[in-house]
Image 1 (spheres, rainbow, N blue to C red):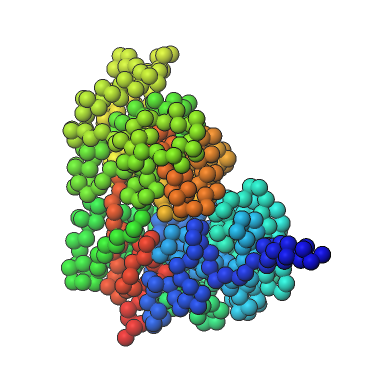
Image 2: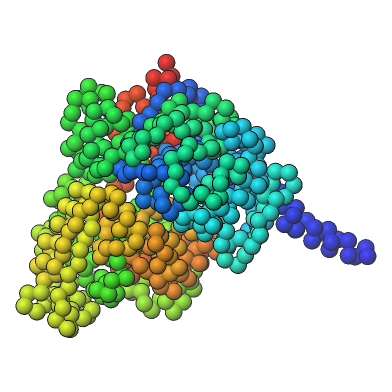
Length: 602
């Protein structure tokens, strides 16, 4: 019996039930901030709260429930919105914008998790309350997960898929035990990307109906007024439970926040010029360079700011819908991608402001660009290595530079050769398949800048007999058609982070190919890509993680699922001069939830 006691003690110490509570969790390694930290490093902790801000968005809404399918394409911004801050509904933990993927306590004061991440236990803050004064309970968490599973939209409806069991533990804790469908990232997604809803204030029978009823949440703001499709006004909840916890110090600094809706971006910008909107993030270099010659800029009432995040570039491109038979052949996609004359567009449309994007994680250690595949990557790729262009594999791959003429003959000859390999030749001036059917497709655009790019692309493709139509649609139609994959080619952005994870399944995983509302805009279903994503999600060390992402990057580049466009290494924001922000720019760039009204500081 004596010999058994040490073994029993060791087993008890390693038991999941005895995992220690922690103030934060990181995807890889440990949180940068210690237990007992005072605030995030990129806030102004002593900011005086007050004043107001008016945001502008392009779109519309007819519901104050952003979690159901019926509101997916008409979104009420702010209620659950990382850009403006989760004003009404909150997750269990708060993500730091100054670390790759680290979470700190919010509704959950502490968290417990075993080394294998087979379970996670959230210990709720005893001070956490709903806006009606009722406490946030484990029953609320369990209710939320089951309700979103049954009535929510993607991705909320899939939150319980990797969960074997969810149970209340003690008076204020809830534990999720995971099944084989879970991965090492999922506990963090569960903690930060899932809203918690009040069980006592929601009727499950009517939850999936569109409604403008004012919701009860745990967040720092209340809905003050609503004009459907036009405006939502939020006011600070003076009794907000979390205003003094470290993860919220320096956040939520306005007494009132309004979100104004516009049908088009140019209308939004005109509203900003007139002082109807206070902040205008600008993503167009020509617009940034030319559009700010108006009195309020000249007299200092409007200020232009440039921020430099320390992030990978992401990818913007014309995305081929491979669900369409004309885009099934990768040689055809490669040829069409090669035909885009970036140098001409950059010179003539954007004053040379852009850099060509060639990798999904360009500018970071996660990118495969300029790096030969090393042993860890090759092990992940296995026999899939044979399907990758040798230049992409050895790190020498680059997109060719044209002569900026809009029709570089050398490049177009290579395009025609690739099209021939894909089964197309020029007949009577038209690029046609073996049955004589001409290659034609439509590019769906949403903005004037997208339309200009599409016209430039259209002009070049016509030189080799490819017939391209362009259709520019309003935001509602764009969201509707992109959500149901009703397009040939679409312009889409794929933001990237230093901690890519489960969102990649929704963008490129086979399981999301036919799931309406997913972000798998290219319609990709490739087992090799699935395996690379699995390796990325399963990685424990930073070295294994980086190798998995680079292998994944090579597969995406080799698939030629889109026409890579461009990026700028900066973020541009114009603001009214009375809107201020903290001195430090975090890893992920500017953060609107920590900005403030300088008029309240006087």
